Image (cartoon, rainbow, N blue to C red; front, side, top):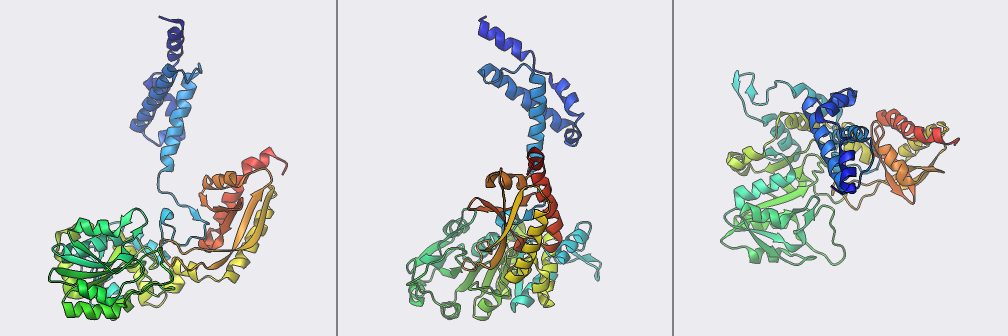
Length: 469
């Protein structure tokens, strides 16, 4: 055996046994929380990785027991970070997909708690037996959309998939080339059409599609005319597309279904976002939209329109695959009640944030920046003009004016500050522009300001101990 091999063997003797390492790890309160089985797995992974690195020559440290313990603890901490955790959204992006899109209203949160145990999801209290799932929520949707019926599935992509599967899988679907878009998360309209078994019939051009294009494409195998809202994709300039009313007239003459995938669910309207009730009143047979974007509720996909078509969708086996659970019904129902009561703009967080004036945010920002300066941690906090973003692929042309708090530190880069904020309790998600960390209070609730302040103090505390500043 060579000298090098002997050296490696000597180092490997320093590796702790799995049992020995587990006993040591279980003395950590954080690790004990993981449970014996997981701690044992982390111990094995730690020892195995160190053994490989010693053999490869990349680790020569003699204190392998300490290294193994530190590595196992870090593995657990990284794993624990992957849990869903509350964060403070200070980005100014109202519907932030990565942060869970729409924050729920207080009434929606209460409804989730109330329904989290046994509840009447499929029980009729009057009859004392099995009831129908989702009837109350579906009636609310029909009410706010001014239509005959509705049904709920787990997201808007599922809604579109279900409609096309049930109503067009044996025929052609006509769609404008300008609407063959890809939305976030690799959701491509052509891929969805293909997966349903429907045949895609493209008409018009990328920027201009006329009603005659749809009319000439209609044939005996046509089952549906599909209109898709392009989300955050826009074509400007020399463009044209027919109105829903014109498309509805054509659909009736050709005896085919007119289906509009609206997307964001702006029940009260915003910019040029389509409004479900308006599309339906203009003649669309069915519309589909999200519950967790501009509607301001939980993740869900809503289909509303003609009762005969909704009934057909409900009877299809795929509906059971895509239907939602009791918690979604509870939260969505409470959210919709705010609309039917006329209180949506006061009670739905997304609508509150969008409607918050720049003047209100300026007042909050100036006051909050003053609190930061009083920390005496060497933090510079100034207030500057900026813009918020609606987000979630909704209303991309609308950028509400806001007032931003710009944070900097003489000895810390913007990246370092942003990283520290992300590791605070609770984590603060901000944005960086021009080497400044920016906080937009539009997306920070009033009752979150103290949490935000404490998180900032926590983030800078280690650095203030290192420097007189």
